Amino acid sequence: DSGVTQTPKHLITATGQRVTLRCSPRSGDLSVYWYQQSLDQGLQFLIQYYNGEERAKGNILERFSAQQFPDLHSELNLSSLELGDSALYFCASSVAGSGEGETQYFGPGTRLLVL
Amino acid sequence: GENVEQHPSTLSVQEGDSAVIKCTYSDSASNYFPWYKQELGKGPQLIIDIRSNVGEKKDQRIAVTLNKTAKHFSLHITETQPEDSAVYFCAASSRDDKIIFGKGTRLHILP
Figure 1 (cartoon, rainbow over the protein chains, first blue to last red):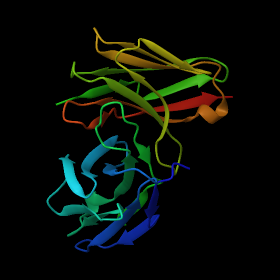
Figure 2 (tube, chains in turn orange, purple):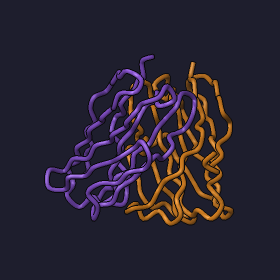
Figure 3 (cartoon, rainbow over the protein chains, first blue to last red):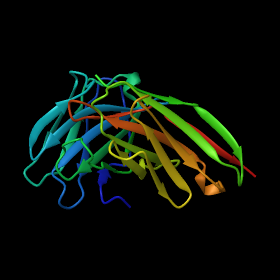
Figure 4 (cartoon, chains in turn purple, brown):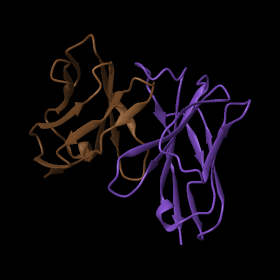
């Protein structure tokens, strides 16, 4: 158990809908990262937050947004969902988010299925 | 930006034999190289990491080597066991503070 929690575990929705994925980082970690993992694909970095502020952006679609709250939990919002958005979404956390020599701890993921 | 190539994409080894997974990276400024293991239905878990000031690191049956000149690093698993079956990801830190992952290697341990 990494200490990172994600809810829900599974999510089934229809095209055009909007969903919110939630992540609570490990106790003491200030940085949260979101990744997308599609079938046969590696981990695609979406976005990083550090202590409530956006720190880095990856290949995140404009239909997707995220935020980190004062209690450090984070939410990833996916809107106007398309079939291709079906994937595993992982949250990870680290102490400070420097990226250099800092271990990221992953949550169990949310499996999103768009029908 | 940083690009990480990983191979092979699939690897089958007999139980008890060794497994080697290789990765290359493009950014010479990268200085942190973690390896993650992902079991079915779970999130990736860190199994070992190495920093650029070290050429090799070992933890029981797992070892990682780093060649900064050639910009490649490898994961070695000795005396493989059935529980080693999983997907393994290499990664490298990037200049802009991101961790870039390889596409993964699916390791099968054959009985």
